Length: 85
Image (cartoon, rainbow, N blue to C red; front, side, top):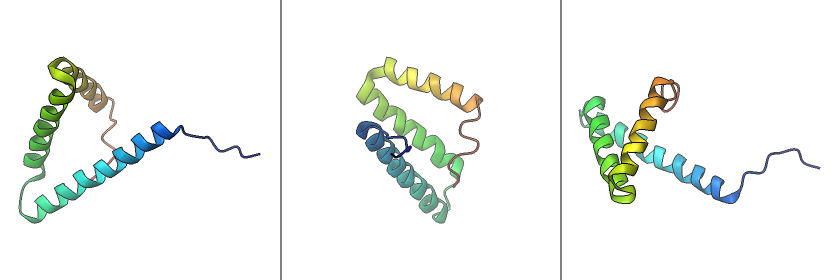
């Protein structure tokens, strides 16, 4: 009998999509750096573009909730040890 934890398909698919999306974003940062674009400029532009997408999908209130949760996650250090460019 296997003791491996089974992850439901939907969660696996979402995790796979998230990992793929992070790869695209990481690649965009690398390409921008090659073109001499400062990471801070791209990061702010990426956040603005992401917020536009979130507003389109979830409306202003939903996007604001995502932004509020991001602030808590930043303060908690969640992004300090993750994806580096």
